[in-house]
Amino acid sequence: MINISKEEAAYILVDVNLTEANLSHSDQFKSELIALLNDKQRSIWLNMQHVSYVDSSFLGAMVAGLKHAIGMKRDVVLINLQKDIDDMLKLIRLDKVFKIYSTEEEAQQAIA
Amino acid sequence: MTATHVFTFDNRPENITRCSRTILAYLEPLLTEHGQSRALLLRAKFIVGELLNNAVKHSGTEKTDIEVNLGEKVLTINKIDTGAPFNLVSKIEKQDAQLIVSSDVMHLLYAIKKDENSVSFFCKENLTFELDVNKLAEHLGLLIITKAADEFTYHYHQPTNIFTVKLNLSR
Image (tube, rainbow over the protein chains, first blue to last red):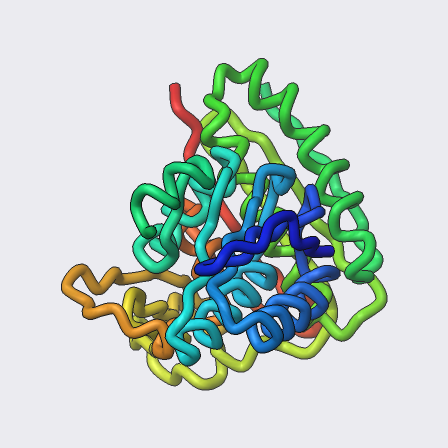
């Protein structure tokens, strides 16, 4: 469901390989995200370019992953959001919670 | 132009996507013909997805009906099942009394009793919050529906639960 596409010193870039990210994927996604945080001890940058829809369960899993990361003094960053996902995040104000960038390069300039 | 259709969902999580796509495929040409924006279709998509989620998590039945009605001024989406009632109706005793359904650092979600068998949901945003991610809610379904809808109510008429979502159509 999530695959590492790049490992940097400060972060792991991960592709989310879903188009419809919903209840049927949320538990597995949360487990994989938390396991990756524990294993790599680095921030996770989620490349969301293939995801065209997220529901509340998947967003809840993303928030749970973020809480875990913050507890480790790391972060979960969102890259390449499609407009519908961006609109969903804005609707429930999660755009104020997650760091969101259009590209990995933009994130590097902002964070690194 | 008006149209009504009932879609039956089998409450299986693996079929959420298929059912949602079927409903949206029905709605999209109707809303386009009605001159509605893509933003309204997107709100309907969020709502349908969350109603199906709610069915999987809470209905406790083998099927849920999603009834879609496109009127002249309002798009109405009803989620109908005969599962256990949502206890909000009995929890709030007096008409017009309010109860906080959920809260976190950014939102307060309320239910207000409309009559003996109905509640309506509304939400207040905390605009001056200090972000503490540990105080963020992870259960967001009712919040999403409330914020995406123009009106969101729950009605219990034994043995039937009806969640009703209304979206105002632009002229």
